[in-house]
Amino acid sequence: MLSVLDIFRIGIGPSSSHTVGPIRIAKRFVDSLTKQNLIAHTGKIQVKLQGSLALTGKGHATPKAVILGLMGLEPETLDPQNADAQLAKVLIDKSINMGGVKTLCFDPETDIIFDYEAAPDIHPNGMNMSAFDEQGQVLKQQMYFSTGGGFIATREQLEKPLQDDLVPSGTHVPYNFGSAAELLAICKTENKNIHEIIFANEDSYRTRNETETSLDRIASVMMNCIDIGLHTECILPGGLEVKRRAPAIWQKLMASPQSNEREQLFDWLNVYAMAVNEENASGGQVVTAPTNGAAGIIPAVIRHYCEGDQKNPQNIRKFLLTAGGIGLLYKQRASISGAEMGCQGEVGVACSMAAAGLAAVWGATPLQIASAAEIGMEHNLGLTCDPVGGLVQIPCIERNAIGAVKAANAARLALHSAEQMKVSLDQVIETMRQTGLDMSSKYKETSQGGLAVNVVEC
Ligand code: SF4
Figure 1 (tube, protein in one colour):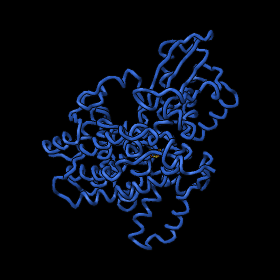
Figure 2 (cartoon, rainbow, N blue to C red; figure 1 turned 180 degrees about the vertical axis):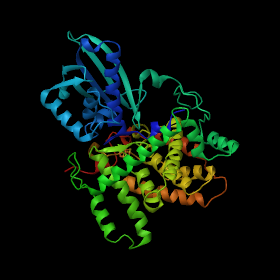
Figure 3 (tube, rainbow, N blue to C red; figure 1 turned 45 degrees about the vertical axis):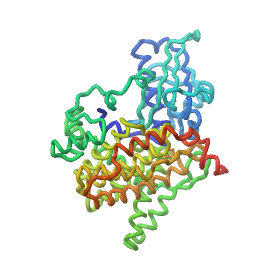
Figure 4 (cartoon, rainbow, N blue to C red; figure 1 turned 60 degrees about the vertical axis):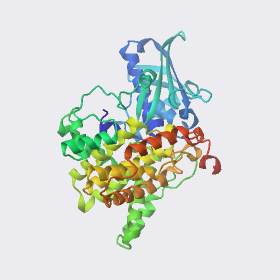
């Protein structure tokens, strides 16, 4: 079993697969050179971006991510402002200090190659890392894949078959589950709700106190991201000239907070989700939930329903543990990568997770929580990924707002039903997986179809 803290990773925007994953890959490669005593002999580093990383890497800030990773920075701890300054220095000096150990000549224009022709075979987000000695001989070469949500894997790791739908993590947990049916059966046998089962599993990784501290930190980064997004007015980077809209909506709402209850529900969820995704599009600090592109949905729902007067850290932890548990099912049984599944694998999964988390906070039974998650995905099936200009802006920002509203609706619908649902969570996850596999690559984070080809960039 993976941990829910693998699902919620603190990082920087705009993309978990194209930014967070590549930072981690570049850092891991440099660490491996250090470990194998190769770094002192390294004279040149070359990075080849393949598949979706090549096709939308420029708009998703992948070259910047590669440079930060080579410098030894980590997504969880890097300061976005400071990182920009360090990046600017590399671009001017055309040299890079690798992991604080060795300085090399490095020209991003020629040493980061957009390998449009190569079609990575086992995952669409391929990244080939090579180190050469001073004479140009290969010292080490490794193919990595950025598999969505900031997860990374080598070719060897990806080729390893799954065991009973479980991604092996090397940690023994008390409650192994490879499907929603198994999770619900455990809940029934143990007479516990989903968040209690997940919490017990998390105890195998670290102390309960440490897990609580990490969950609280995740929630605090999410809320901080909303606050920054609500108060930052600017045009988003990348050339599409998209203006941040959250601050103006926020000011309007604050001017008459109780004007109309029915409209307000949508307005609040919209503004919180957009604040996060506008911040993400600016390269700010966000939490993968389960990805950066879909990072606004869970924070928006938490902010509206679990913060303010109703604030209770236990509820927020319950939300995150439940949502994280549902996210693990998608990660294990399908994928949370837009490049593999289209946007149903990002916004669809986030909506499903948020619906489950909210249902749990509202006192739902395990079956109702699974039903909320199922509804949250069922009405996102077939959602394509077609970002205009390869940027995580259109349709991504609004899509998170719509996803947050849909999640609240899914949780409400599930709470009104006490019976066994007709479509199970496992069935909808499998449907998403099959739909994602059938979807043309034009609609899977390549910007070769959909809005990306019908909206003219100015
Ligand atoms: S369209 Fe969806 S999957 Fe694609 S980049 Fe935007 S949020 Fe991510």
